[in-house]
Image 1: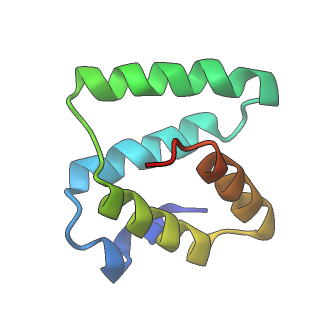
Image 2 (image 1 turned 120 degrees about the vertical axis):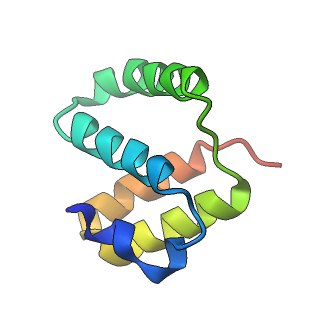
Length: 89
C-alpha cells in the first residue's frame, strides 16, 4: 500500500501531519514480525503523545475505511485484527 490512500477525499478534514505520521508508521511496521508488533505499537503511542498527535473516533473510522478500500486481502485482515483490539466505548 503506497501513500495513495492519503489522497482519498474521505480524509480531507484530517490534518496532513497526522496522515504523514500514519504513513511513517505503515512504512516502519511493514517488516515487523508478530512478536515485535506490541512493543512497536507501544513506542508509537509514546511517540504520538510526545508529538501531541491524537485521532478522534471519526478520524479513525475515516482512515480505516480508506485503508480498507486500498488494502490487499492480507492487509485487510491485519486491519480487522487491529480494530478488534481497540477498546470499546
